[in-house]
Each structure stands twice: as structure tokens, then as C-alpha cells.
Length: 352
Image (tube, rainbow, N blue to C red; front, side):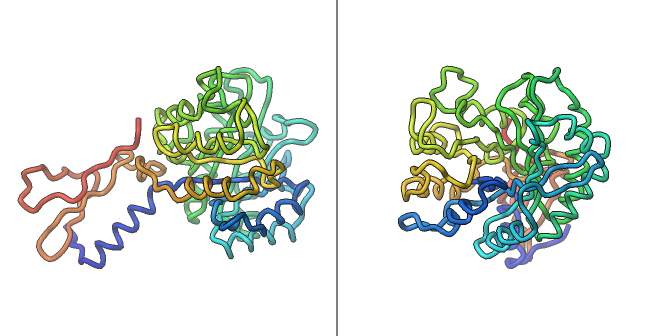
């Protein structure tokens, strides 16, 4: 078996840490709010800058076309480049958000792209992402009042196809979903298992319907995180949709931010609609303090959950060996407690 030097051991630990999905603090830039979003990103909030509370932003600038292309809507190349440059300068990931809201959410437009012209659509998204030096793709393709599982198999196949193209480039893939199981809005939470190992984060668009004390217990942040974990995701990959208003659900925005920190089993990732931050509460040190806590909380479970191998969700095993460290494949026999050389790491399963 190959041996690891102490320097290689340090590098290996760094790679293992990076493999776990860090918590997300995401917000979107709508094409009708570009100026206001720039102001938020350039603002100061007590001791914080915007970069201190954000990990990702999504540029909701692109529509699909019926032939599987992508086209700007209400924004342009200069706008996309400004945000891309800001993200690079501030260590915040910037995603291409493609959405199908024209006159209402047009599911036929979405399916004509991801189902009828899936290969062209996947390539067009990657090409547009590369053009502006963006960090990945965020799918916000929505349909309302549909039959159960409408185009589910085609959507799953498209996510797999797009994920392969993006992962080959070291890029991210995120998916927006409704906040109910087995609903008539697509995609919904019953589809979670379809994307396991293919997406980096799931954005649950519950917004004003989601809060910890909701009478509908399925809308509590803790329930939503458990639902994602049950499907096999790291808890940090399950991102709670919050409104950028001052209050909803009988509580303040700050209250709901703190619920995301204290109520789920692990500190929850969040995604905020939208980055204009129309609620003044979001432009405060108190809000950014909570956002920074979420951002800087290390994930607890689910390392390597995004790219499961033969034994899904397991870490490689390292153990002391003569001349350095010994690496054992996750498919090999793990060392036992009686191993004379000692055991540093065993498998760490993704949450169930």
C-alpha cells in the first residue's frame, strides 16, 4: 500500500475537510434589482461587510429557450461580469441561475429545455457559466398545478447529465425545490433522492410558509433538515428559504435566522430571497452576525456525501504505518480496534 509522509498527511486532512459541504448563506440577484443588490454588496453593517455573511449569490438573469439555449432577461453581460468580479474579489461563489418565469412559471418552457433538448441545454449552461467565469449553475425551474411527478424522470436525467459536466470542471450545481412532499408543484421534496450525489445544495423555497413554530410541522426548519438528511444528504446541503422582509410567521427576520441556528439538529444553511434586502432588519449588524455564524459553522456530518463511491458517504481510512501514514481505500477492510499500529480515521457515514 502507498505510504504518506507527514506533509502528505496534512494535505490529505485538508482534502478530507474540503470534501464536506460547508454551510451555505445564499441570496439571489433578480434582474429587476441589480442596483439595489450592488448597494447591499458594497455596504457596511456594523463590523461586517457583505462578504462576511455570504457564501454564494445566484444571478437570476437567464431564461431557457425552447431549443435548449439560454438567453439574458432584463440583465446583460456587463451586469453578470460585475457580480462575477465582485465574487472573486470577496471569496463569494457566484452562480448562474436559470429560471422559467415569463408570464408566470412556464413549465412547458422548462421541459422543452431540460427534457426535449437536454444535451444542448446542459452544454449551453456550462458555456454561459464559463463565459463569465462563474462558479456553477443554480436550477430554478418551477411548475405549478401539475400532475404528480410531472417530468420527474427527465429532470433527474438532466441533473445527472449537467452534474457530470460541471463536476468535471470543479463547478457547483444547486437545485431549487418547493417545500412540500407529493404536491402539485414541481420539483417537490419527494424528488430529493433523485439528486443525491449530484447536487451541492438544495434550496427549499418555503419562504413565508417556513418557520420553526409553523402550525404545519412539516414547515419547521428542523423537519426540513431532517427530511434532507433522511434522503442521504449532509445536513449542511439542505438550505432553508428565508424572506428578506422584516417579519413573517408571527416572528421577526432575526428570530427566524436564529431559529435556523438553534433549532435543527445542526446549524442550517439558508437561502434568502432576495439580495435587495428590502427589509431593513437584514441591513443590520445583528442580521450579519447571525449570517456569519451560519457561514462559519463547520459541517458535522456527511463528509463526501455529494460524491459517494462504492460505500457511499465513507471517508478514506488513514492509519499509522512505518515511514508515515498508510492509506486504505474505503472499499478495503477497515482496521480493527486491536490493530497494533492504531487507527486514526474510520468510515464516517453520511446521515440517514
